[in-house]
Length: 154
Image (cartoon, rainbow, N blue to C red; front, top):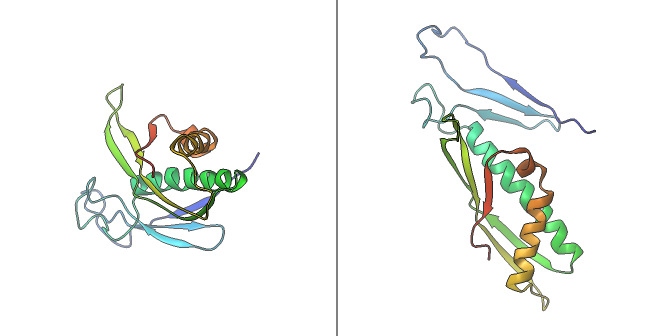
C-alpha cells in the first residue's frame, strides 16, 4: 500500500469569521516542497472571499484526472512503439447535481490533442485502445463516481 500526503493550511489572520466574509485562500504543500496558493472557486464563493488567481479544489480534481490519464497514456504509447512529441489536454469538469440531488463533479471531459513523431503513427482504432487502456489503469478515474470521458482524441 502506498500513501500520499498533502498539507493544507489556512489561518483567519484577524478577519471576521462568523459573518462568513473571511478569505478562503489557503496553502497546499506537497512532499517535494512545492507550495501552491489555493482557494474556493469564485464560482462557489464570491470575490473577495475567494482568490481567483489560486487553484481551487474543482480545478485540481479535473487536473488530477487529466494528468493521471496522460501519464498512463504516455507509458502505454511508449510500450507499443509510438513516440509522443506532445500531449495537451484542455480538460473540463462539470459541477451539477448527482442522482441523490447533491452537488458533485458530474462529468469530467478530457480533450487530449496528441502529436506523434516518426513513421509509426497509431490508427484511430489503436488510439482509441490506448485511451481505453489508460482510462482503465488511471486510479484517479477509478476512484471517482463521476464519468471521466475522453472527447474526440486526436
